[in-house]
Amino acid sequence: MFASAAHSLTFFRAIVIGLLQGVTELFPISSLGHSVLLPSLFGWHDLVKAQSQKESFYLAFIVGLHCASAAALLLFFWKDWVGIIKAFFRTLVRRKIETSEERLAWLIIVATVPAGVLGLALEHQLRTLFAKPLSAALFLTANGLILLGGERVRRRAEVRELAVTQGLAPGGEGRRLETLDFREAGVVGLGQALALFAGISRSGVTMVTGLVRGLDHEDAAKFAFLLATPIIFAAGVYKIPDLTGHLGDGIRGQIIAGSAVAAVASYLSVRFLVNYFKTKTLTPFGIYCLVVGVFFIVHSAIVA
Image 1: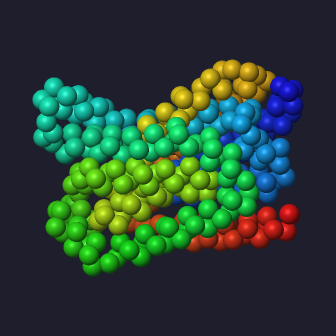
Image 2 (image 1 turned 120 degrees about the vertical axis):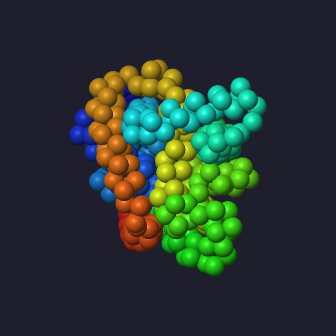
């Protein structure tokens, strides 16, 4: 069994998938969807099948990649996280929220809880059912529609009015991030649970939710990346027994190699995206998801 795992997950495959994970985890195009679709395109059908199995060496490998992406996010936003953590403990001491940073700390907590609970309850079942090429292609197409729909809704007059009512950010393009209320943060958390379906992007859903509540692209992206950090990290830590147990036997070298590539790719990706969303929109990513999703729907039909 372990020899078979090592044979299936070669170092070349590990590096390619690590690069894929590092980029697609943070770009709003679904890492889980791409981890199903591209291996199927490359003919790595053993890896595709492993994703939907109850136990597989491939899951141990993915754990390492998730932890690597989370580490890259922590490194990039470390100053923000130091301030957020300090702010959180201040609220515990004072038993009240006084500053925008303290409010942001609690917004992150409120948005993380529903996504975390639903992830624990449903991740295994949904992965087993939907981590397959055709399903991933359909959900990736839906992800494209979500991104394009979010861009359309954000331009409505009522969204702009909401931003003005709540208080515009210094740039004047959207409301300040800390003006989100806890109910809105909870909705964001519920929306992130859609990323349990292979093909739906966590960062994409989070950004769209922020945009339709009046945030600009820059703050919506920052909130998405801050929220992704504890969720990705927690998902990795929760699955560490897979990595250290028998499922990781024979492939730990590949896990290290893939994770190193994923960490570098994640760091470069978030650095690029933070600057990108200062002036640009989700529209190119929405179009990409539609094109790739439809392509793989047709590809899956032909292969079948």
